[in-house]
Amino acid sequence: TPSGGSGGTPSGGAGGAPAGGAGGRSTVETANLIVNGDGEAAVGSTDGTPVNTPGWTSLGEATAIQYDISGYPASTDPGPADRGSNFLAGGDNDASSSLSQTVDVSAYAAAIDGGQVTYALSGYLGGWQGQEDAAVLQITFEAASASSLGTASIGPVTATDRADVTGLLLRSATGAVPAGTRAIAADLTMTRAAGANNDGYADDLALVLTGI
Image 1 (cartoon, rainbow, N blue to C red):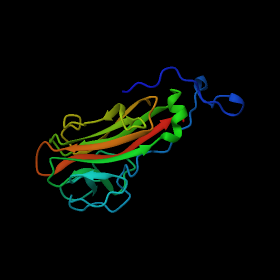
Image 2 (image 1 turned 60 degrees about the vertical axis):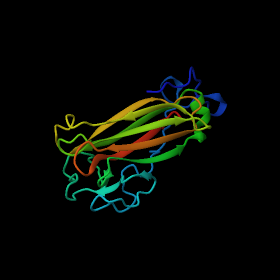
Image 3 (image 1 turned 135 degrees about the vertical axis):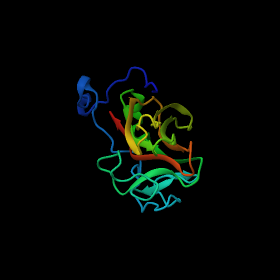
Image 4 (image 1 turned 180 degrees about the horizontal axis):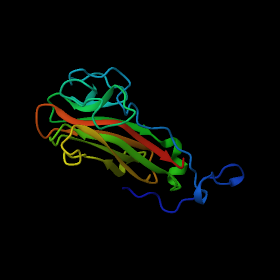
């Protein structure tokens, strides 16, 4: 977990009074900053071959796939209670693939540099039966120059974690946003360990900042 900026003074409202929250820190949150983290923005693949997955840049066969198609998770398998029609996966016959996007957080620069902004990263990650195919979601805190100021990640979820059952389990991480952060890159990487399909799975990916 990356460390935040040192010290930090809560940003003031009118008259210099800090925003609400314990200790005078702001408790204002962003919406989910990850676009299409549930793969629902377009129709998912029905056979594992790539389809348009809005919000993400795809490398390899990574794509959104529909639940309940042969050889992939069912809507009744472990996973999000509020799942939609699709999830994100490594795709058909691909040893390693990824989905990436970058979020501009420069609007929150003053609060970030004041050391008062924290992040909450979460998502459901998983795989197929006893295979060790898996997904990892990593975020990189980037300076204005695009240099890395630190990273955080969730996953992988192993076959042992899943008790060798097909499904997706919730994982999360929290911490401070490093001072100087102006963008956050999100990279979802799926890796195949066995079989033909890349069965690293993800759904309901979320990144929320608090203290803005």
